[in-house]
Length: 97
View (cartoon, helix red, strand yellow):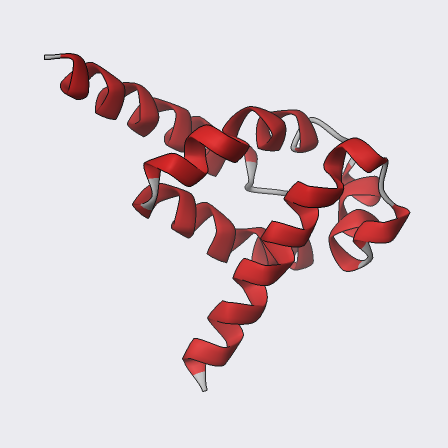
């Protein structure tokens, strides 16, 4: 029973993050999409980064895009998450080739 609740919780959390990842510009959405898809498949990754991602997605649109493009410009609290997002994007590009 507990695993059903955990899976349901992860599913709800993922849905909320997927909705929040829909941004006002296509570039941010494109950079976020592979990571959001990866979260749907990996509950451990969702547990590890879900709360931080929710906070990051509350950032101003222009700041978020700049940080996605160059994580070193972001506040240090977002650095590991932004690097993971970029890694997911890069892996997705390689997989498409």
